Length: 401
Image 1: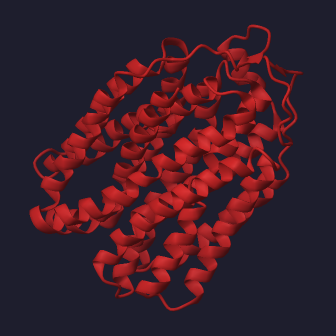
Image 2: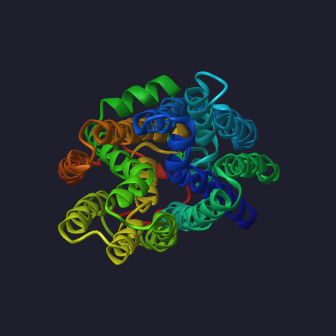
Image 3: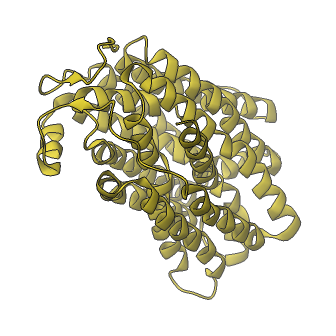
């Protein structure tokens, strides 16, 4: 179990660290390749939408065949996608194809597959804490890879840095070799249910739909920030290195916040904690825009947002496992995550379009605020009662409502 937790944390750290650090490539790539911010933003947006669309299918394969083969295959796909970006000048459509491949790679090596494996191996009374711990470790990737990427770009150019990122992505395949799927000793006892029936049951559940819709805002806000914060800071006259420091700070405080929310989710209402994360993120954005943009305000903003960044992961995991069981967890999580990635797609792409059209990000920040308040309302009103009566196997520990 300990080996599973360590390897899962490292793989997620590498996967998410690579993904969340791609924004530092925006400036050098647009300058050298002569492409617009919208073109770069679309490649990142495509990665996110492909990640979301493929997540339920990748999750279904992992539910059936186990995590290891999925992790190995998608690690190499991820690496191929990043490496392809280097050939964007000579290969028409390279950026779009790279985003497509990186999206599939992220679906297999990110949270969706490994969280299901961890959840099945963990007793219900410790599930949110354990998932929170692994997600917290996974949050540290950005803290290391963003400054590393910026250093590599400054010293050797963006192409060499991107090849380095591709090599890191490929290394996740080696880390995946020892991973074994644990027996579902801590699963929920239910009648045997086909995948299609489980999906239809979830999609007819009002609370599941509310949570899925609210998760759209999560992706919209966070991917806009990781993709466009470096460019926004440059417009505001903040030194380029501050953006990499901000992304690293997000990763550091992300680890603290995710671990804390994992523990809080075992004691308090998971749906209300989720709602408060959406609300607090939105209030922090408002506060960031209300004061003069400087190095100090940016780093405070990054720390505050980082604290709330991935705290959603253990909470959503806890809700899905408690309401629907774990047999088809990866698939049901994948459907919810598709909404997140739709938000990511529009957040990344919208930011580029707004910048190209208006020369600033004012409209984009307004959209982040409006959608965050909507997500808070939906999540707070979520109905989290199970569609049928389910009972934990071998454990009668109460779970938070």
